[in-house]
Length: 266
Image 1 (cartoon, helix red, strand yellow):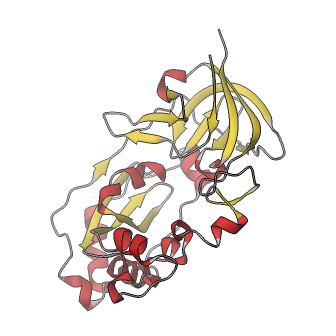
Image 2 (cartoon, one colour; image 1 turned 90 degrees about the horizontal axis):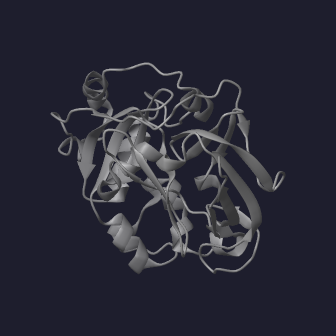
């Protein structure tokens, strides 16, 4: 079977085990069904997710020009505390920024490689946790806009990490942590304007990933350096494909790359 299209982050569904789906323009692949099968990936070009042109991808699936132009790559995306739509102030496109920023947001704790704090739109729970490879997560604050979530995250950063060690996550070198206790411990550091939104009674969400075998020595596949690769798929975690030879491929980091994906006959 052969598929052709532009890579975008895989769609997910949380069931007893996470279900992964790769969507191309004319094709749809249930990735869980490819486990233990030989898969080939061939890089054939670029397609910017904003302008659609065959231009080298710079960051987040966008070419250089679009990355610095589209509101989908504004600084407030990575730094929610810079959000200004609640003040009616524009960054790149106020209509878009209001649509995204002025909706319920969650501040959460997720345990992927260690417990970290993060921010996401309420509509992206539990998708955001799955994308980060978290095996457990919990909401700690629900606020009406992105700015409040951002200042809450900034206040918590001195007391807890906001980063995931992707290598540790993929090796599954994890330990369970009581996130309810951690949530209660961190409450004292939340800003006053966020305290009323604290979620005192939420329970942890546990997530199981479709992995048959975890890698021991990671080798990251870079399509610019190695445009052709074949290997047996042994797992999917976060937005990574994990292969038998310890090669890992971050689908999200390769958004905007046009590929041929071939499922080889046994």
